[in-house]
Image (spheres, one colour):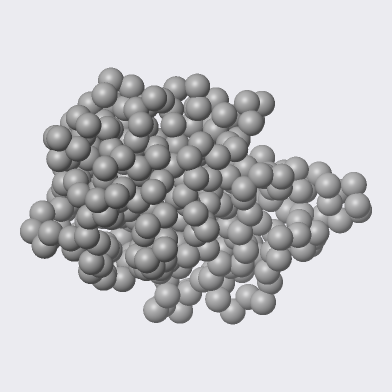
Length: 341
């Protein structure tokens, strides 16, 4: 299933540092309750702080985001009357930096996804209530109506459209990580991998794509070595020691690792991205609500307002995810086809 592949892509593809381990431990320490709610309080009305408590993963900024009544008027009546937007984030048990994890106060859920949820809620004039659960229970929450919308790196697929409606907000990308001193770039051409040694996590979407490229190169009489390591720390060590030329994994995880190594002798950089949906379709990450809920339209309108007014770009830049920007939020755009969901 694509659901499991995407989740394993994040959990196994993130190149970890000691900071990741401590963040994961703090998230586990916050309890095994699969419906634990974590919210940010104390912010002034109409102001959203992005990148708070990020443990160095983001640049903290405060953005003025007043309600846009022409957009909030499109909300379902029961949500508008209630005054809250209940947002599901499937980050238990260990979190996945930089998208969703417990912050450096060891209790508040932070990350790019909760921040976007808070920005959208502000445009809609709602108080965000963010519920952290396991990935599976997040969907149970949406299905049961206990959660209004999931903002949790969910890929738009045609299979999921049978049950859910979508408002896209980020590209679903894989990326190559190399040392900062490396001059190699992917340049959106698999032929540039000829003669290289690349690490990838087994059983993931990125492995499938990389092995397809390896087979193509072999038919052309060229070689691509694919390496596997026991964990992300071992992969990072192999990269900095020169045993591999690059690692291939989820773009958000690589973006996070780049921020963690930026001021060290082992600094890395992004050497190119590739759609998680493959060469023929740009994969999209989307806010996910129950089909027929009437939420996709106002959420997409809120995201487009954030794009138009520059807050969207600032949100992505704060989390080093600018290379996943979309031009606009779309309601139920073409998703991963049924034969690859």
